Length: 65
Image 1 (cartoon, rainbow, N blue to C red):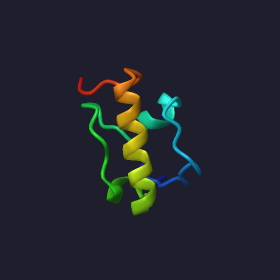
Image 2 (tube, one colour):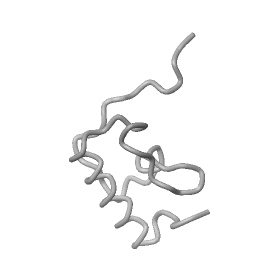
Image 3 (cartoon, rainbow, N blue to C red):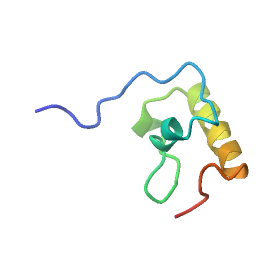
Image 4 (cartoon, rainbow, N blue to C red):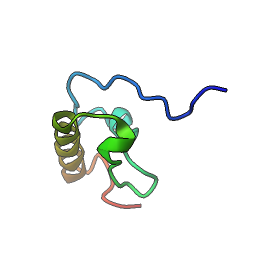
């Protein structure tokens, strides 16, 4: 049976305009998943955090649902 939590390689750069890609790292309540769950390195997790927070500031992503 395939593992549904298989980790994929992250993009080279997280773009705040790519909302669909950022939503993969958000819970249904619009919370950012932990690095343990996403499989990202510390640097990638920080880049993801900044991209999500900037997208929220621009109203591309919700703060909460």
